[in-house]
Amino acid sequence: LFGILLTTPTPPPTPIPTRTAEPQPTGSPGTTPTGGEVVINEINWFGTKESVDGEWLELYNSGGTSVDLGGWQVVNSTEGGTITIGSGISIAAGGYLVLARNPDVTGMAEYLYTGYNFGEFGDNVSLLDGGGSTQDSVNCAGGWYAGLTRGTSMERISASASGSSSSNWSDALSSATYAGTNRGTPRAKNSVSSTAATASFSSDSAAFAAASGATRAASG
Image (cartoon, rainbow, N blue to C red):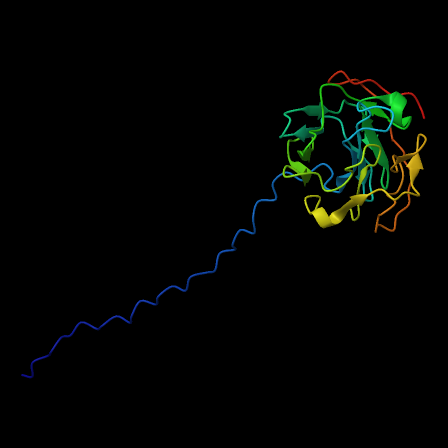
C-alpha cells in the first residue's frame, strides 16, 4: 500500500489593500467679509485752518458693488475711540463717504460722529466690518505719515497698497483745495491718487440712521 501524504494547500497571500487617497481640506472658507475693498482713503487728523475740531476721514469703495456699512466701525486703538456707523448707510461702487466731527467745517460730510478724536502724535486706526473683521488699517502709532500742517489732509496714494505703509500716503497737493484754502479732496478722487477711477460720492440709501451720537449732515 502506498501511503497517501495529505497536505493542506497553502492559501494565496492576502492582497494588501491599496489606500485610497483622501481629499485634503483646502481650508475653511470662513465668513466672507462684507466688503473687503472699502478702505480708509483720506484723514484730516489735524483739523482745518478754521478749527482744530474740523477732523474728518474718508472711506473709499474700490470694488465693483455697493457695500452696506451698517454696523461697521472705525476704531482708534491709540486714543481708544470708536465710530459705529448706523444702519441704512451704504457706499456705492467707486464711491466715497466722509465722516466728520463738524459739518460746518468741511461742508462735505455725510456722516457725523462724536466721542472720537485723532491723536496729536499718531494713531492706529482700523476699519472693521459688521462682523468684526478688519477690512483696513492705518497704523500711524509711531507718528502720522503726512498732514503735519493744519488744514492739510493725509491722502492715500493707492487703494490696493497697504494702508500701514508710510510710502502710500502723502500731503494733499496745494492745487486741491476745499472750504477756502484747506488742502484735501473730500468726496472726490485724491489729488495724489494712482487709482484710475474718478467716481464721485454716491449712496444707495437715503436713510442715514444716527449711531454713537451721529446725525446726518446737511448736504454740502
